[in-house]
Image 1 (cartoon, rainbow, N blue to C red):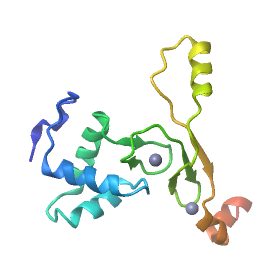
Image 2: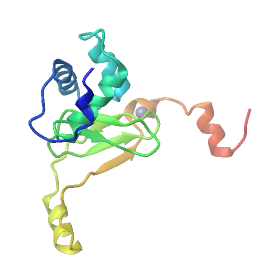
Image 3: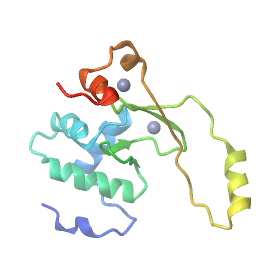
Length: 152
Ligand SMILES: [Zn+2]
Ligand SMILES: [Zn+2]
């Protein structure tokens, strides 16, 4: 196994077969999969790969800017093969993340740039909601319990 993975030097990034397959699989989907989901996708092509290797390579790929890491407190980290600036919406029930069919808002960015004195490097914009699938489902027992605080 490659022991140099701790080295965070940006470029050139050595494209190992594993990395290429991970990148390839991630770019095929727009579902913003978690590391576990990516592991299952990649395993079909690289049966011997370990979850740890997938995790490590995802970190390396996102450090080098080839993929996007979507972090959010309380839910699993997700990855996006699309590194072009775009906005997301996240389901608070199932954790699903979708791209918003919305162009970016340069006015927002320039207003921030002018106003805060920081050198702005970028930003993330994520909306929260309940996805179409979850909207059709009745609330789970757990959600009802959480609401009125009773236990069964
Ligand atoms: Zn949902
Ligand atoms: Zn996305």
